[in-house]
Amino acid sequence: MAILSEQGGERPISGFVALLVTMGCGAINDNLLRGALLLSVAPGGLWGDDLGKGGTGWVTTMLYVPFILLLGITGQMADRYPKRRVIVWTRVVEIGLAGGVTVALATQSLPMTCVFFVLLAAQSAFFSPAKYGSVPELVSDRNLSRANGVLSMLTNMAIILGVAAAGVLLEVGPVFLGLIMVAVATVSLVSSLFIPAGCAADPSLRVSARTFTAHVRVLRRMWGTPLIHATAAWCWFYAIGSLVITIVPLWRERMELSDAAAGAMLAAPGIGIGVGGLIAGLGSGDRIRAVLIPIGAAGMTVTFVLLGVMEPAYVPVLVLLVACGIFAGFYVLPVLAMLQHLPVTTFRARTVGTANFATYLAMAASAILFGVAAPVVGGEPGPWFLGCAVAMGCVLVLSLVRRRVMQAGACPASFASVGGDP
Image 1 (cartoon, one colour):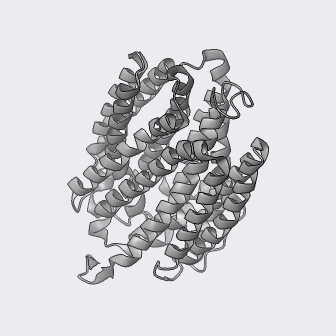
Image 2: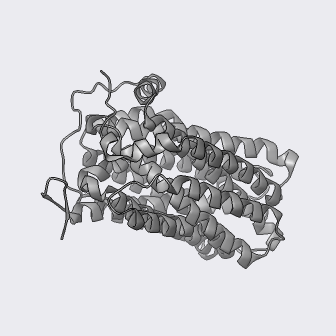
């Protein structure tokens, strides 16, 4: 079984499957611990009073800071060294970190758990540019939208499984959650060994420790191209999405939810994103459909308004969160495809790394905003969802204003049109 290349050659699908398994396991582990911390610091949780009303915002900030500090280096490393090598070594490190998480949860130490949470995020910062940059190397250009649809579905299903399982495993016992993380990390390492070995994209690249300078250089190359608009769309979307994940646990105390029920609610948007991404990917065929971006933004705006004004009840909220996720899948799939398609091969991983850096800055800003404002604004989800609706409404307007630019970026003639340093 193979995925045909544009030139008529073949690329075995086994390498892409191995990457999917590796990515999925990484997503499960990241979200097992993230979900456990979000539920534990929310009102009514194990550490419900330790971080105050804005606790979920501070947990989210801890996740993003390592990405902000490291992605400038890790994007360069994914171009400088073979991506498979980077992926395998991050899997080895993850096994050790999962063991540390197990000890921290066994002692019920919030500070120690947070330290390993930050270290796990740092490991993911090395993994991220390499895994996303590997996709175009494993599938043909004409199959990239389909591959991203499958990737989106399976990755988000893994996120769903991690977040939902976090609530269930917390009820079984925190130590058991840690042991599951060790097992998942081991599976991830084994699967990474089946990713085809490849050459470094740019072995002569000098990796600079001046991370912010590296990002500035990449942004300068993006400027004036559709890449900068795709990056902006990517950032704004994830800033709002991060805020949603921070808000959802606030319903736990209001609805008197168990850990498992609250975990299912956290997972609901991910279910929708997986479904929406799959529909968008398969429906796009061998093209990038930029028209899906304003459609997705409009759908998310409407669902945020409904979540903000309705009287909260478990099933209706769950349904709306899934619907919101479906529209999010429509929005994000063409944006991701453009980020992968527009740069030349030797510039691709750095592009993804810088786009992710900007995204994590935006997500950290929204998390810090919540952490600071929650004690003042209050912990009711309704007003926060209305704020998300206003923000996504702005995204909708901008996506319509920039539709010609985005359509140009989705055109095959623009593929591999943005190069690295002259």
